[in-house]
Image (cartoon, rainbow, N blue to C red; front, side, top):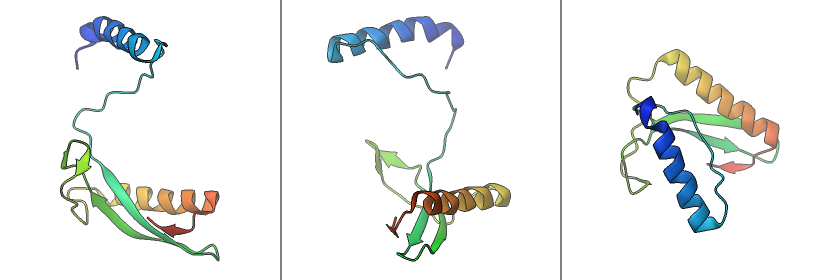
Length: 101
């Protein structure tokens, strides 16, 4: 979380990657403090119809496995909910997604 720790942590990560994979390359992502894991449920058929069944908060996890899913996601502003559900539908239409997921 502290910028002054970045150099040491980067060195540690590249060293571990090199030892484990023979390549010290690493990806750096933006740090998001207190992130939330929000998913959108989608239904899409063979005719190009795509709908969302709203969102759920899957932030409570243990060992990277969801423990609790809360729907609708609490404390999610309506404008954010509208943007993520619309984006999910648009993405699925663009890639030709057909399934429930």
